[in-house]
Length: 232
Image (tube, rainbow, N blue to C red; front, side):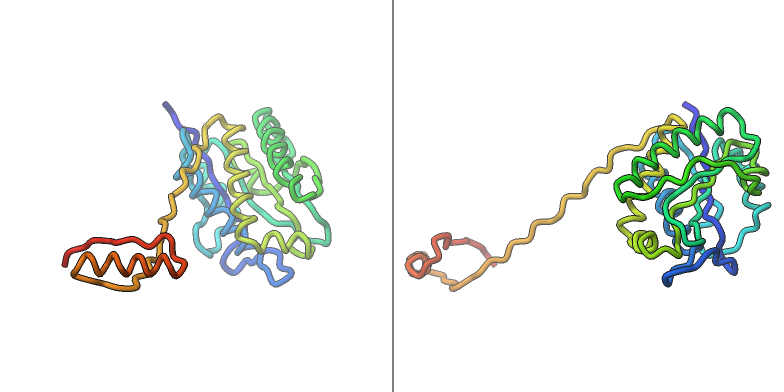
């Protein structure tokens, strides 16, 4: 079975901080979000391969972003960005002269993330088209997503939360899976270790003495007192 190859693009990086606001930098949030998406696709994706523009805080030019994805043979390019300018909400972009595949993928992915953002009552700013370099120079269908506004306090408050980025990353991964035809496995919860604290009131070598101590403990209001036998 052939895998679909997905490229995750974290915008900006290094000396290019992107937009800033409310104590946040766009490059940092995009790196955190993109790394989460990559991790989900690598560990829980079935029928998908994933690669990324950057996994650390480094600068990558627009040309290089597209060239790397093209050279790798990506089937789809997903670019993460955060908006600025005093607005609110989310929006998506495909190239000004898109393929039918790009239009179809945008419809599905935008719709899935609209459902996610509706949980937070965030405005849908619409499906748009633009002559962005990463959309123009990539040879595969590509979409650029603007996740909220970094300079709007309510939006920034969400972007600053790890729990929100975790949820958004999963929503993106699931949206990609629906659009591109692969699967995201259910996460198997790791059982937490149960810890019990035992209270010991005495220790005896003679059974009768131990039984007497248990009787006294029960008389004092400890009905669960019992004898635990052990050897050195």
